[in-house]
Image: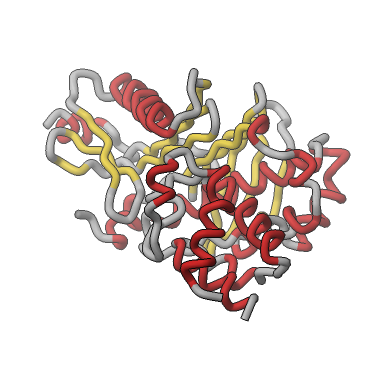
Length: 82
Length: 225
């Protein structure tokens, strides 16, 4: 699946946990989930589980711990839906 | 800017706060969720200690989360490229409150052993960690606030921490900034102070911790810059 398509879907996954929707609309691969989007770290597990449910995939622990940026998220999802 | 080796020498601090009303009890109790936070050993620890700790399972999950997050924040000042992987920060021991109100734990981060103290009160879990099991030079606190917006949380937690610092260093000119690595630092005038600081917020609660130098009189002068 094209990274842009995953990015658009990922914005919907991140939306409930992101206060600044304008910032969310303009995210790219380099956007840091905690530092830039100000997502509370307590919601990081929620995001992984929501992404798993959305794509019917399972993101393993090793991939999950590398999810720091939006690009990492897209990589983890893209790898599983190849 | 101070190096990681410098911060390692002056020790560190790490804290976290979890507003239980902002968590999903049902989701937290699902294996798919809690297995990303608790190792098999920590799940066994709960079963063994449930009677002693009298903790609901979802509270246990978030208590251990807050310990692990605090350890990560403690370590991020020293290890500039830390990865927050809850399963790689084992909590080896958790004792319920006895003659005080603290849950006391022991957690590991690589070769380092850190001690935790947590309070569960008024719908929040507040944790601080230290390399000193007696927390002699550590100060920490939390407060509810009227808003859950990021801007209000950020302003409130800085105000809370600075008020506590001014009580120790009256008449000084202190301010808090964030480094490029993301952790907060304390400045006295333009001088970076060796007082590691950690800030946390969740929903309508904020918390701070800082660690004073062993002889904090020596710091009153530099803080006055």
